[in-house]
Length: 197
Image (tube, rainbow, N blue to C red; front, side, top):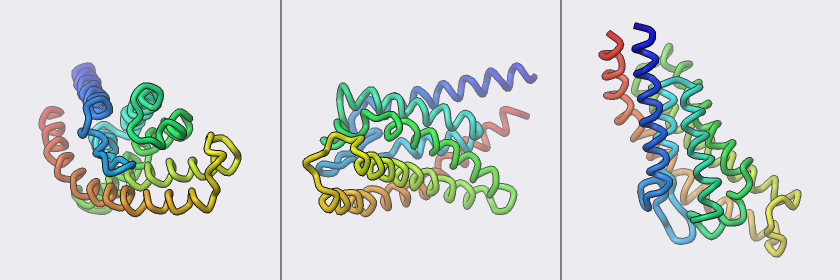
């Protein structure tokens, strides 16, 4: 029985990894272009994986997203800015791992105190915000210390851009995650419980 559950968990983890890779590669599925920026939807998949499979597996799915985004920054960037910032794995990989960690830990903490839907919505919201805050925070930090090759861009010009990303991307992504994560994760959670029985 334990081996059967483990095999099921590995197969579902592989499915989430495949979905994240497809979202990274197929246009519009993971990054919806809006002018020079992209609205990201992949954090929803990572948050759902963390809720269904646990924090560790959520971090693995987030890590796959980060690694794929890092490789894509060299070969096929999602935005003009990605060429300069996403080539740094601390910006492209670490925040995506933390999406899975935060969403998973928060869900398991809230699940004991609130209903499933609210716990899932808040976990999805937190996962989206973690991605936005860490990516933009690291961009700002590395820019300050010269770790990003944007020497011609003054800090006064960078700050409105970062604040604009939060307004145009971060807030809609967080709202989208709060709505979509419970809608998708609830039936998956029921299915998982029925399989375990």
